[in-house]
Length: 319
Image (cartoon, rainbow, N blue to C red):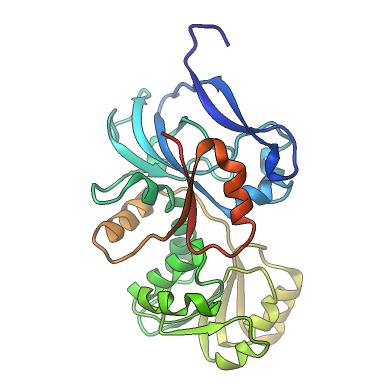
């Protein structure tokens, strides 16, 4: 990097391993190609896929061997637009989940990505809130709306309802008029009811699934006991297996048991983010931020997330 090249701070991972593999480095600032924008990142969301990838799982097969920069959730301000961009201009506040599952490099002061993978951030939504939205909310939206086609009157079960994806899925399903049941630890029951859950079941109880029946759609967010969880579906019901995909065991159980099972992976979608941002700005959907960390403490953010006991999302403050 010569002295005339603009630089930026970023969190780079040199090898797979523990959180201490995340180190602060200085690298050249990217330049937007045609149809892309350069975004000055104010905040970056932290997701389970981040630490799974850091460990050599998650999207490691897509990113390949380190070094690479983690992070797909970003919120900030458009610094520069490439040739052909007409939907955004310099100075616009934006949020998005660019490039997923390819490297986006969200743990950095700047990112470049196609303009249409971003949405404008509503004035009523802070950068911290916006950074907590994209991957988790798009996952919930695309599962509930696009994959499952949830409609008024459907009975929907959301496992891990207090997590990043779960708390959005609860709200989206309720917004669509569904009867929503969520599983969560007891300390989060009242909060989930405030978000719209009709019933909340403590997953710590050995027989907790016996309290649930006749479900139309399961949004399965734990990756655990999928076949047993699917037992609460009505005939012809659908289970969408999000974190671990569709196992052979679950596929066989679906074929034998008369229910449907689907895998799912989130995709960038600026149009859906615009809709979601409007719901948040209007107060119809709430964003829960469990904790914030400065960029240089990305390792501590990962360590907190890996406890699997946070409510909502973790966000890095970059600017």
